[in-house]
Amino acid sequence: MAFSRREFMQIMGIAIANGLITKNAFSSTTQNYYDYQKFGNVSLMHFTDCHAQLLPIYFREPDVNIGTGESFAKAPHIVGNDFLKQFNLSPYSLNSHAFTSLDYVEAARRYGKVGGFAHMATLIKNLTAERGAQNVLLMDGGDTWQGSATAYWSKGQDMVEACNLLGVDVMTGHWEFTYHEAQIRKNIEKFNGEFVAQNVKVKDEALFDGAEAFDEETGHTFKPYTIKKVGGKNIAVIGQSFPYTPIANPRRFIDNWSFGIREAEMQTLVDEIRQNEDPDAVVLLSHNGMDVDLKMASRVTGIDAIFGGHTHDAIPQPIVVKNSSGQTIVTNAGSNGKFLAVLDMNIKNKRVVDYKYRLLPIFSNLLVPDASMSQFIQKSRAPYLDKLNQTFGYSDRTLYRRGNFNGTFDQVICDSMTNVLDAQIALSPGFRWGTTVLPGQKITMEHIMDQTAITYPETYVREMSGNDLKIILEDVCDNLFNNDPYLRQGGDMVRLSGMDYVCDPTAKQGQRITNMTLDNGKSIEANKSYKVAGWASVSAKSPGQPIWDVVSTYLKDKKVISFKKINHPKLKNIANNPGITNYCNY
Image (cartoon, rainbow, N blue to C red; front, side, top):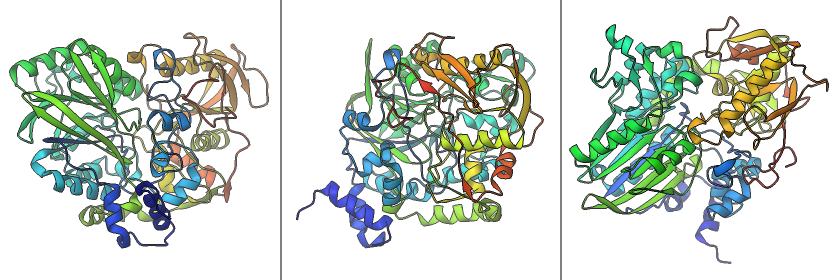
């Protein structure tokens, strides 16, 4: 019986994952899976949103990523089988598992964990050796210094060192800015590459008071762009950090700085680079979120490619966006160290004449870990192992976060607050980072920290009216489903326990949330007060204990994590939306 190359790779993956063969026994097969031949004269590699995950992990892609308005049925708002059809991926394959949540548990047990900096290092080194180091540029889209216990305890410095070892040339940021300004600058000083961000400015009053700036005349906090020689060509890399950082995260940590999309300034900068630097290509290293990048690509001319991040969208093919002077290809490279993007370009006469792109899933069972990176990771984790490995039982279902609405690990966090803090209702931010735990897998302190490790983790309990709750839900919902991509901040819906509601993503602002009820079925009244717990306040430091202490207290006496219910909202007007699959009977 003859097998196709794809089928053969799947069989090898199954055998490796189940310990039937060793990774080294089929090293040639492993290399074939990542056999991405050199093309053109410039190779740009990109990863983003790794959220400080140095080791291989499980990470489940969303089953809900709803698009409305002009985003309806368009990437990245496609999931499940519709995603497979859109990008011509085979079901029950390695790529199906990498890019969708279909048959997640079975496939995860079959193919093993994904990501890991040691495995990524091997892939980067192999691809670089084939292309030639002088022809390769490695970019990091940000959200690198946050998301794990060790990053939190080392203030991001373990990730700076890991990226130096990986050979990152250029990066931009978002969660990097949730350390205080002094720590941010300290980390950037230790980073061997360049940190770029055209859309972060020092406020005028701060400049007057002597605040540090990259350029006092323009007000740029950081270098806005850099020119890199790659394959003998001058490649301009512009940085675009997350525009809404002071809204989504505490302004008090970086009070001297202002952020924004700054579209007009972007166009001016691109024009100046084109005129004064004589580049062979201009690319944008972005943390806008994919919807924002798609709109920007349609309006700002002169950018050849956008390497996007923030929304954690793993898109296997670029989206080509037409604009008034040509076109821009827009990419997004997933999250959690799970993917490496490779854009090979053929540049002639100051023009990209052709390109090839692949978003390569990093299957840890199919890559031999790099020895030097493995040694560094082991050394950096050694002081914390006892605490990281503390266990709290297991769950009888998959614990995950990613998706527009409540994930099961979010439910654990919210249930922890209602129980430990004695609240009727609990709210938790719609963060998109956080690793996955398989059924039967031991839950460790490391897993808890993967969901909660931020620099403002304090909990609170306060009285809120039903009207206050409605305003919060409507505000976050508008962030997800506003018709203008520039007004979408890229997070998911606030998670909760103790209450339910009905959501119509297609409704107008202020009218998307209805039928708010407590778990006992009683309607939430606008003028009635309710005891609400939460964490991660962006306005001011809360008085309560860190959220990880609340969760660990809740879990410490449990052998099996079970749920009375999952507070999934009921959804309206999404019956034919390809951005939802296998969600609460839809």
